[in-house]
Length: 295
Image (cartoon, rainbow, N blue to C red; front, side, top):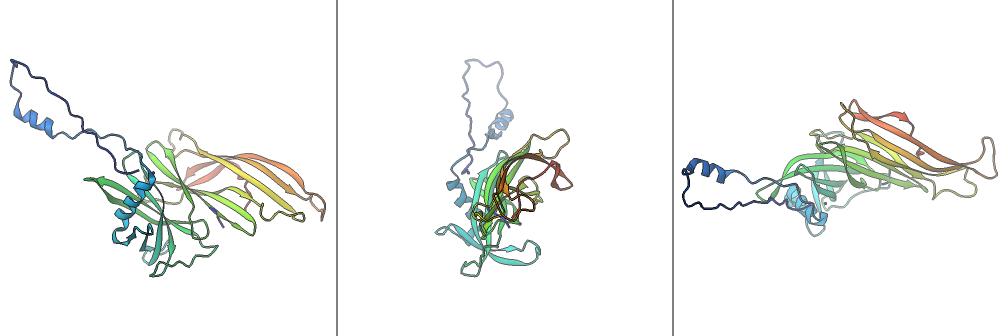
């Protein structure tokens, strides 16, 4: 029921020149010189590069021989979302990648169940399976650090949606997935949030942020609408693990007057807001209301 970059980090080496004195007051101890020479060069902030360059590097590092460069995908087994001891063959396609402020690289992929030839059996109602991998650089190579496989089933037609990079709190990079679908002319999109710094990554929010009846609204339709929510993450207050999610809704709904069997629909503006706070492992509505109609 839903619709829906980054390359090698440069480590600059700062070389400092030494002036020669004609008559130094005292010799420089050798041990001190050796220690100074062995001191590591300071690390710079990660350099953002073209996502197209990073994606194949990370796919190769994570999936090794299962990665197929020609088709830019991988065919491999992943644990089932609800029964982790059971593994099934999946076709893996990259969604997004980025080098985070902490120097780690995040790879977001979509998974679909497939046969040994990589043929999927995706239907309209089939969600995509979201997996996230965290990698670090060692000796110029990306090395897998953490894997979060099939952490959520999102979207439709086997696709888990599009990714956006967000900040949930200082030092806590986040992943926002926008996903949904269209059914018989009714479309809807959801927002899902994940903490990339959490070693036990989980689905923390799944709320509708947009829907419409554009493909199903005709002269005889009793109700039509188009409503969207503009969302953002606020800076966390003292003591909060993550910032609140704020949504401002706007749009319009048209409906026949109550009890009427025909006639002209009456149009009403939609305007309002909602606030979600992180409590007990998930974001929960604490004020306002989500005004996006379900489908």
